[in-house]
Length: 229
Image (cartoon, rainbow, N blue to C red; front, side):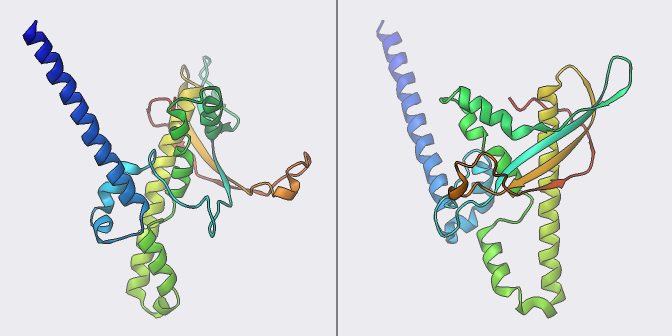
């Protein structure tokens, strides 16, 4: 009995210590992620971003002076072969709405965090590093005659966009797999939707239609992935 009791006590103690250490580790990373850039966060930026993106990513854009100004959505279209072997093209499927609907039905669920994935994917198309953005602003006019620096910025932006498109297309494949689990999917296409928010003055106007812009990515081969949910 004493041995069993000691074993249980030891296990509970180990679990408690592990949870405490993980909590300290987690919130230390989150703090380094949200505070202004400093030597420590800059040195470990790669690890911090890999841990926080996309589920734990946080920023202050909800507040002034840079409030959110766009409502982004990811739409997906797919081509698959039916039972007769003919290619069928679907209508646009709203990949963002999946998370929103699921979150509305299950308020206490991981979907609340997962719903941020789509906005994070759209942001992944553009360089968002605080240092990069600030340096870009300060040197944009001065570097017009410096081809080397201009090429470095251009290369970084192209690489970022390329990686972002790859991630978005993989997400598109997951959305297609979610809606067409039993179909032989061949191709997918992703459309990004950028919609202006409804002004406060128009909140009660059912006929008001906010301005919406779209960016279509090219058709890509379907990538075998797990469904988004």
